[in-house]
Image 1: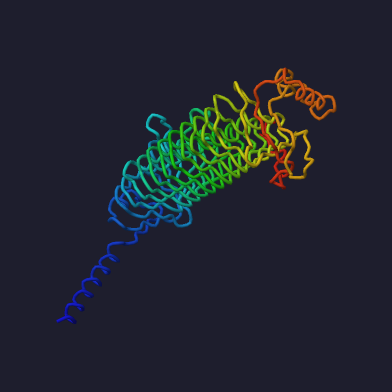
Image 2: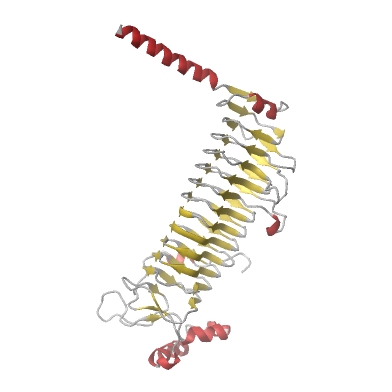
Length: 425
């Protein structure tokens, strides 16, 4: 009896397996054939392979399936609506050139629009070009967007373009190794949590990344360059931003605005107008970053206090810190930071300066009022003026103070990041 039951169970399982194989059919679409009709006729779970060619289509995918390009076919939306609209979960789109969406900002026209409920969608190795928004992702959780090339309608004014990838009200997104340029904001993240952004190149746009009202996200190993602003974190908390490179942006490299409980560590911020712009920021860790060759290394204001700032290298910035505050802000209390214009000494040989570093001294204030003084910053006269300011506190104003700054930088290859400025400079 047991043997009969076992054979019956195996037969049932084999039947299910065979039915599954039959269910997941592969459908081939050739140039000249109706791609939309093929998608409509497909069963859930089918694979649709699209041969190389041009397909004029505004495609609706309303069931789980895989849409796979063979030798990179082109899908053109004819400059109207969304080129591909996905309303079902578990859809995979890969290996396609997707272009020519409409240009209605009101309707949020996109090359690929993942509608609410399109959970677990995968978009990989596609070229999304000449669309208003490259990818619009709305209320779709656990999506994977990887290794795509995204460019916008570059002849449009910045304000009339859409974003490269827009995330709205999502959870668990993974955005990996995409190359995005000539859009409004390369990555726009709004009310989206528990996401990972890794290995992306974001350039030649307004912001490389624009974060709003989003929590528990990881931003790692990304390059933001030649934008107006590199990375902008606004009205957010519980972020980890590490091992990124923000360089050659015409305004800021990394903006931290109204931010709490975050870790900003081991980033390179080079050749920007302002390296860090820090406004209304509390309870963060700003550790191990290289801030080099910016016009202003750090612009600090609006009560940004109670932060841990340790182990950073501030090298060759024309103005190390522009500080607006009513009392001293102490950085480097535990281990100190390195400041390339520090004039102190280390008599006891512990690799930390014996006198405090003050970033907002009399010379700094004079250079704000008289920018031409910057030509003389390395002269003996100006260095002497710094020493005079230290000896006569009556001339002193509130400053960022590093009690025992480190004498040597941690980043030994810092000079490789000099001269990486915005192309118009």
